[in-house]
Image (cartoon, rainbow, N blue to C red):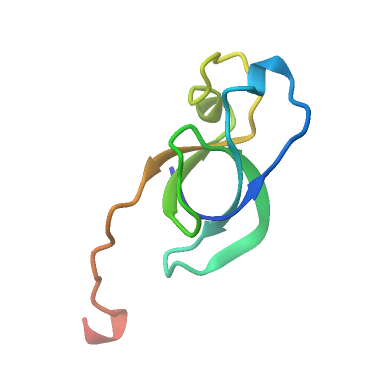
Length: 94
């Protein structure tokens, strides 16, 4: 699982029937310091995440398990919501 943040919504006028029940969002990957990594990408959102929500996401085969039909082709899907983040001591203070 990887950390990411919802940065937008995707609106599709026409969807393949396999995707009708899926909400699509723009997601950006986050590093350990919660800084954006790379460009935003489209991910399935079966959980109904809020804008700016920090989430766990999966790619590849694991992403397909988030769809109602696991044979649906997905590159990325949100699989969990981050409720809170624990403060970690800085490496300088250790």
